[in-house]
Length: 386
Image 1 (cartoon, one colour):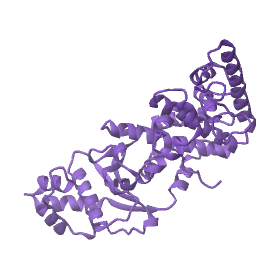
Image 2 (cartoon, rainbow, N blue to C red):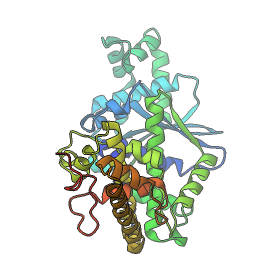
Image 3 (tube, helix red, strand yellow):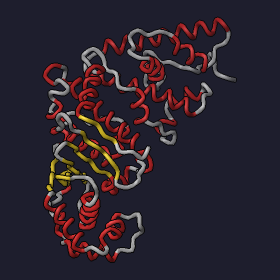
């Protein structure tokens, strides 16, 4: 395996945002002691309100900062074609930043070279850009309007700031961001000392963790920062949860990154969903149980990659035996119902599962349509309502 496989969680559907995270992680991994990186938004924005089709068009709303004792590197990420208007927007954002109290030593435009972008961002002259700024009629919330308010009576100040930014500017274009991250993780995640699958799972977990933190902070209207020391602590935690013996993603993060869409026909028609409906639970509880199943499935695939099929068999055989026991006891007591089956099986022990969520998830996973040997039913002919 030459490079890690990008994670298969819900963040992939965010396209350009996932790329933003990869670039943030790329620079994070370049840190040394007494440094930190920051992910911030230029304008108020909610990730939850950005849909996959428009997120690439809003890339200028996000900015990465690498902060050290020598100053700040400001990185603008673009995974789309950089038009003349896009270039002007980037420059205006940087002009506002240069004119603030921050000490910026480098302005970096980071782009995916598959889009064929050239290093032509400063093709527009300071004079022509200033003219556009003065003539703008956009609202006060627009970046260009903010620049106009600050420099409408100070052309020379605008030209000086423009030249300052241009002098600190550099252009980075690559189509190997995954390989670059891989290279920078070799020591951090002990590539030479663990199974290759585990190594790449550690990188995947890092991307998921950073994505979770960034999204949480953005939606709380805060910037996200992580120091070198915090990065090392995070890496050690990931290494302790992903070993040759077991894998344990953070459930709370997995849950938030993998929302269940009940409008998705694949979910609505699934046996897992229909069986949970029979338990007469509210939608939020159904979603939680489907997430248990998705969490288990994610871990299951990881164990398959490690050829740990025995562990999977032990978890699922134990879960099915627990189901048979619960069903028998409930029938003997005369209170067999879909909800009782689900509730009681969750109380049964399963020493092969490394967490309650894995145990619960194996039960949901075994209700799927294509399960042949150990299929579980919360509702069947024995307890179906007339």
